Image 1 (tube, rainbow, N blue to C red):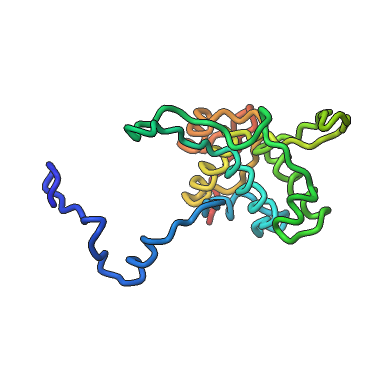
Image 2: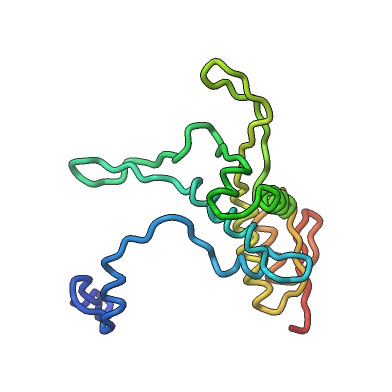
Length: 196
């Protein structure tokens, strides 16, 4: 099959040329996705990736990814909906610990670290459930702009920038300017050229 530009397009029902890739085409992977850039931007003080924070962030991002709503008859996209009940994601440290096989303390430290770099914000609320009042219930609010900034700063690091810090109020267009010219910005984005 050839498209209008003369490019040969592969038929999705035929072989890719690799039996392993062909078999992988039949599998449906769902769940958390970890962008490779996070291994360079979500790090510990020693510069190594903070794997616990990375897996927790990937889970938070999963929950904030919208679900498509499609028309049953036409298949046309009608809109999107959220996966959780409240306006922001309700999680607790023990749930995270149990899900990822880590201690509650590790979950707390990772979430606090994610809050420090500005990609999530902890919100504590009082919730009524079954006639009972529960205070200090943890909710995690995803800061999409800071998440994009983490990705863009990883690109900057890859392209010879050295030091990065993000605030909760990172503005992505200003980050792009910082990536382009290496300047320091007062809004909390800081990238310097380095000898990498």
